[in-house]
Image (tube, rainbow, N blue to C red; front, top):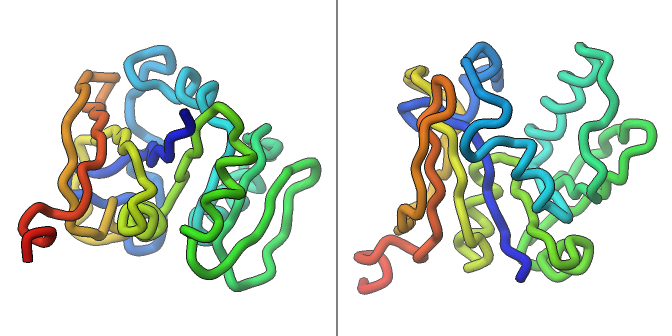
Length: 186
C-alpha cells in the first residue's frame, strides 16, 4: 500500500533550515550511512517524490556546487508557481495549487512504493491537513538555531512507532493520527 512519508532532519528546536535556508548545521553532523533509519534503505521504498520550490532550489544549488548529477531515479514533482530549470536527465515535473489534487498522480507514479515528501514543512503540513500524510520519519540533530524554517507548522497528533540513535542524531518514526485532538473536538 502506497504511503505518503515525510522523511527529514530537524534541529532540536524544530527547524529544517536556518533563516537563510542553509543546511550547514545538518551537513556537519556525524551519521552512520548504514545505521537506523538511514537514507539508503529508505530511498529503496520510494516510488515518487514531491517537494516545494525552496527545497528544489536548494537541491539544485547543492548539485551545482558539488558537480553531482540529479540524485533521484524516481519521478519528482515540485510545487511552484515559477519557471525553474530541470537538471539533465531528471524526471522533474512542476505543479501548483492544491497538493491534494496531485495525490492521485503521485500514487500512480509511485506504484506499490511510497511517496516521499522531501520538504518543506509547509508542504508536509498541507498534506497532513488534507488527511494524506501517513508517516513522519525525522532525524533530530543536536543543534539549536532559534529561528528558521519550521519542521511541520501544523497542530497535529502523532503516534511514536520507533526510535533509534544514528551517529549524532536521535531518529524517530511517527504515524499521523490527525489534527490535534482538542482541535477535532472543538
